[in-house]
Image (cartoon, rainbow over all chains, first blue to last red; front, side, top):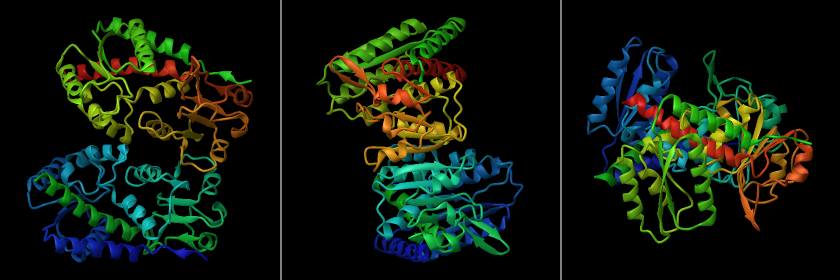
Length: 280
Length: 280
């Protein structure tokens, strides 16, 4: 039976560290969270982020806009937050309604306040191997791996999913730690052939039971970043019961990558503050 | 016996296309090439680039600086080229002498004239999946694959090498074409285990005989971007005689990826010109 990689515990530890730094440096961190529409999952994420802020000693301000908000109105609100010297970090909860261009919105957020690390000025640094600021989920996954003393050197990591929020940045981060990295996705043929090769398997798709026990090798480490809501419950991409019997270590869902993403957000808020201090 | 992927022929075709576009649009393309020091290999590359410019109808101007040039002098020369409205594209031949920061130099070149696609403003676009401008070697490899009608969809591509000039951008470009991509490198354990899985194997290391026949599967397509000079001859990463007996298709060295890189440079010079036109 696999050892659990307890994201919740590791996240609490990181949030406590952020909180200590906030007290020590007497810094006044404000995270602005913008929510467009009334998607239930998004509302839940935002609530969790606010709770984490409270624990971390970060003030959060929330801006809620109706689902039919015009793009220009959202952009103008972002510009206002960019110019507000009290606001250190800006998060626009995704997904946005279809009539709004996510790309345009993400480019509008000042790179100095871009807590999700989606702005080109920040993603260029990821490409160059500078991960001081990194998207919250891959940052959280790397921290979880670090917390459990798992070395990536020479390991074969298979990542299922190639999004800009998870798969792509994580591949770059793990390559930089000397892992051999395979990125698979919806167009991959014979997914099982690839997943079976993994020393460390990361899934970030959002498809329940995508990974079953026959698709992994004995002793694999499994990181499940998938989130699927069904009937009031949350599932990952991995069929936990079966896979956990073969894996050496596995993240639970919930309580694995999810809390680590939130901890990553807290860390990023602090990092943006410290960066700014260097400039002043 | 493998079919040869004749980079030389494909490159000649691309250069002829650039030349036609130059004539048709009556454009006045000037590529500035900066060479620091007297490295023989670099001098040879620069000579080949000048020859290609001649064929493509692109004017090239060359600036040669001694090996002990101060970084500030090089940066100031680049600033001059940035400001010169006649110069459409700037290439600084690498490697630079050790006392000069390649990173700083590459950031100094205006992103509008960054023909090698090394500036953060341009690499951020690669990360986002916009490959209009791409580093010359991966662009050349993609063009060669396209020229031979090789589909990447669902193929397993194994790339050996993770440089910013080849491995990393190529991985992103191939992912975007729906290949499943593995990136291996100097720290990969059991390299042969990975290379044997490849439908398409790309090597960009610079180590003669790194890949031998026992490391590839029957029918593999091999793209050799390695360049090793020994005793006045040029070799790739692949032990050609043995591997070509198992491969279905293979690039020769010389005459494979090398000429495609130069063709990529010609294409990038034209692309920068066309981008500028859109802005004027």
